[in-house]
Structures are given as C-alpha cells and as structure tokens.
Image 1 (spheres, rainbow, N blue to C red):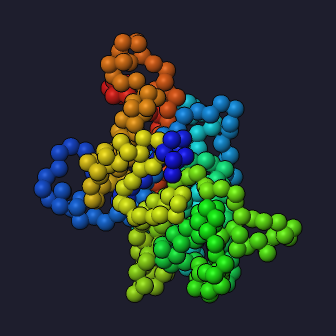
Image 2: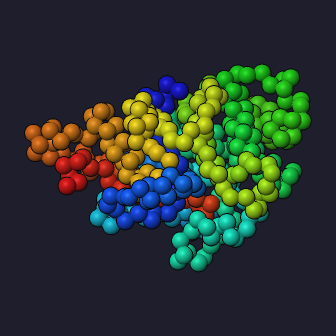
Image 3: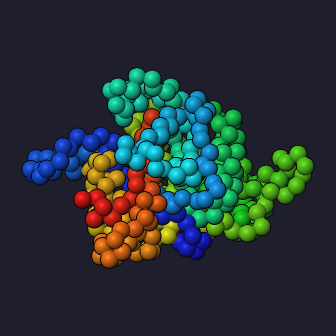
Length: 343
C-alpha cells in the first residue's frame, strides 16, 4: 500500500452515465430530477501521467484486442502527447453470450461495426508496474482455466475479487495447504495463487513470489451480479472495487489511489454526485488531478505562474481519460493546465 501511495501514478475512477445529453447552462428542476433518476452504466478512469524519457508505450495493433479500444487526442494537443503516455486499464475478460440489444444501448448511433462480444472485467493498478504485470498474468491464466472448464466467466464480482486476493495473499506467504484442497476455491478450478500452480510449470520451478506486491488496484466490472436474471439479458451494473496489496477490498462509486490519493478522495467526497454524465465526471476528475498536481509541485499555482512568467511544467502533464462501457475502452489524452492557462 505504501509503494502505491508514495510512487504510484495518481488514478481516479468513478461511475457515470455514458451519454452527454446536457448542453450547458443552468438546469431547471425538471432537468435536475432527470439527472438524479439516470443510472450509471459506465466507468471513467483518469490518470495523471508525466513523460518518461527513453520509454515508448506499446501500441495495440488493429484487431489484436477482443474489444473495441479507441485512442484519440484533443485536436489542439494531438501532436504533443509524449510517446511514453499510455492507457493504464488492462482488459481481463470479455463475453460473447450477450444480446446485441444491450450492446447497442451504450453505443453511439454511428457505430455500425459493433463487436460480437462485450467487455466483462478490467483492472487498473498503480505502484510497481512489474508487479502489476505479474498480477495481470496470473489472473488471465486463471480466467482461461475457468473458461475452459465452464465455458463462461465468473458472473459474480466477488469471485473475481477472491481470485485477486489469492494472488496477493500468496505473495505475502499465506499457507494454502489446507484451503486449496476444497473444490469451492475459485469456482472449483483451484486457487489463483501462484504457489498452487507450481506443478503445472514444465520446468517444475517455483512460481511463488518472494515478497508482497507493491501496488493498489481497481477491479472494474461490468458484470451483473443479479442471480435472478440471465447473463445474456441483464443490463450491466458497473462496479469499482479497490483492492490493496494486503488483500483488503472495498467497493466504491468514486475513489482515488496513488500519489495524492488522500486529497483526491476528500475532493471526490465533495464533488461526485449521482447521475453525473460522462462529460461532468471527466471535468470533475481533471479539476481534482489539477489540485493534486499543484499540491505535489508538478504544476504551478496561478500566483506562482504569474511570478515566473509562465512555466513549461504545465505542458508536460497529461490526463489520460479511459471510459469503460460494454463496447470496450475509449482512451482520450488531455493536456493538464492551470486555471490561468485555460482562460
């Protein structure tokens, strides 16, 4: 947990409505009632990133992903995004047992080339990135085993949370000798813990990690945990679950992690509200990340900027906005500027 709070990339996630039907201006009472009656059907994740010299973010070839991943930049800053800046959300699993009606509900009318599957579960981590890659590999491996046995994915978010906890606790030296013998562990396909799968390695080497993982993670789920409805006809219910390195978990509607998380969470408690549109949520998170950047000294305050005659630091910071709906992930790059530069 300390590694994520001291060195992790600032990340904010919140639930919102996928469509932006407001046109600005002051809303009357009827419009406000409609806003509160809207149900959140997507997740927005904003991360504050700085250029890393000598690093080029890996690109996703067209057709390599099983979901619709779209990358686009602000027109005024399309040529200013550093090649090391990248989206942090990683897709764990997708589903193909869905109705096209539900997919169309969260897509724009002009999107005709729809995938025949929808996003099911994703994860975003902050802290030590090599640890995040290790966790991702272990989860994908276990998801494949689950799919091979049952020809479906875990319908419960709690089941996926348990898989992540198994990996994290195993890295902390938890003894699974008595528990992994039960068929109930991780849906009857064994444990996701690396040490449990040692006998599956061809070289018979140990898969157990030698230390706790230094990260915090958001599990982003678009699954429907309602067992009274079928998985193919139920509408998605987005959830955000924060999982710490010690295996503790808590579900939120809006939460921050990484550097400056304490201040960001205080501002989130004041600003986030039910029924926020995608545009409102993204603008709110940009403002919060701006406050975090000023507090950390990455971005000058207005008074400091005027005394210095402007600063180049503001052009080095980029807000990467990633929107998760059932159709996939949309990524947008937005330069972070202080209030004076925005006017």
